[in-house]
Image (cartoon, rainbow, N blue to C red; front, side):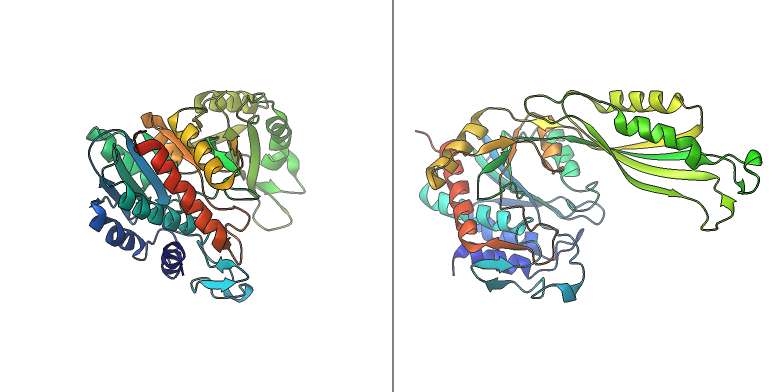
Length: 377
């Protein structure tokens, strides 16, 4: 059994459902502190965070990840217990195998091999881990970054081990992500009897034309790196459950994944302008989940392309698709940020898994990235 596979099995066996860490970060500290990493706990509220750093000089290459996983769903739907790592047909099954304990294991063993060969590398190495990436992400990386920024500790390159690959390991590099803006709209009407609509005001009826306008709005055309901004309604709730009552309020939740052509303030202004055209009363609350970011070029992208080509023989595609990641909290500090990790086909699903061969390939790519960036030619 390889060191990477062995470590991944140990991590999967710890049921770290968000925001729990279940001892995963302690395990990483046990592996890395003998190699010269200092371990600093930066816990906030119910979230556990760890900052592991080796060296104090620049440039600083940081591996970013999360030890928490999503809930398993129905245990009976799994072919094997989700927290009992199981090998079948060349794949390792278990919750977190791909998202993202596989990436963590691959990076840790890559660092171990790299330091054995290059103990006097240039710059510094760090590992940042949180236990709330799969949750609301309010006490994790965003808080750790605040601490680092306050003391002037700057990350040069950040490699996020999220599952970015599509058909084969390393075929896609996430060089950016769209922003995410969430809204909770309350449309205010007047409750009444359905037989006397003239004495009431149905918020469902008054909102319907505005809903059409919001969903048909052309927010932007996107650009060379990002698709156009899109609005999607996620929840609509109204009524008392009775058949003969016109509801007094309607609650609507929607989200916009937006590109670098827009900012949150502009989206909010344009949304209010659309709603105001229809003349109904409403309340609108916003939550900015993350700003868009883009690492279009630079040392990190170049080193990653070269590493993937060296290990696999093919050229990866740069992409900005998918949801959000904790990289959105690192990019505003000025760091170059990319995501590179396992295949994403089984993440958050029943019978989540990773290919054993893929795991070894990923670790080899990570090691080569370290060589490309931290070893002088």
